[in-house]
Length: 100
Image 1 (cartoon, helix red, strand yellow):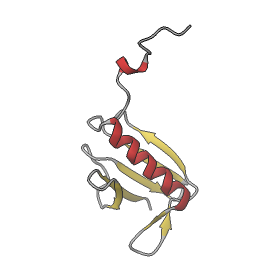
Image 2: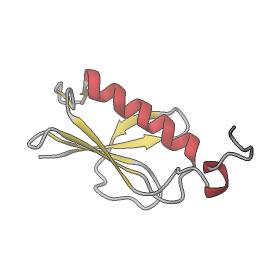
Image 3: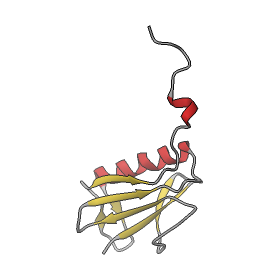
């Protein structure tokens, strides 16, 4: 059974949720059977928010997430980021200066 966490932008933390999909917020799915963390980032999310969610997800990857049932899930799982939200704009991917 997968566990779902929603990223709250106000406190930059993941919280338990019953939502399985979202078009407006970042969701982290903890799949215990495949030992994976699936971070889905919608396209309307900015780069700073995405990076904050990724940092939190990497922390969950190391220590797990303590759920209300007393179980700690997500430890030592592989992190996979899905979605195009929070990417650098094309104009920032190239250096404005020429490299010698």
